[in-house]
Image 1 (cartoon, rainbow, N blue to C red):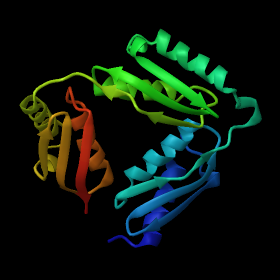
Image 2: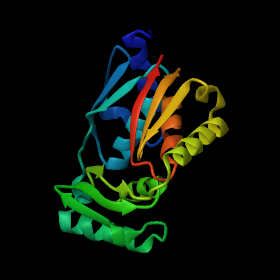
Image 3: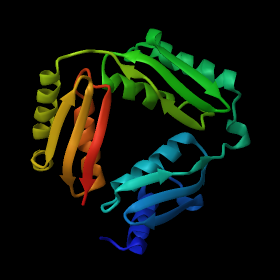
Length: 216
């Protein structure tokens, strides 16, 4: 196991290296391969980027993101303004099925709901909304409604794992029950687990993933 002090320093170095993150007001603690991020940043995309940077570090098995978004005065927006901006994003982006998506805003925190056909659409909506000015947080409650057979889902996931990460795929077991996929096995790094989960989410009809993958 990597010592806590070493893991903490690796995360700090990754945050400092990432040009999307200003690490000046971000704190890091590490305990038993779990990392907690604290402090504050000036916008939500930076908070998201900090969490992603921590996940990339080898040896990190879990990340608790407690970073707060302290918007500069000139960037603050009231909820109605944020909601209007999100509506424009949904309306003008042809990749987003805007008629099926709703966004609620409360004190700068956005909750997305509705249904889409594919997981990549669900992720795309969040990615686009994430960059709307004035947002402090985003909760994605959008569901995937497309239904396919259990056997088809499992086959698509296993094929994707073999194409994208053959070495890791050999260590992973995939089981499917209805629209729920359970992943079990072991990988060597946090980012490898994320890669496998992305492959699973790419299968049509998947609405929930139970992640039992261990990071060693």
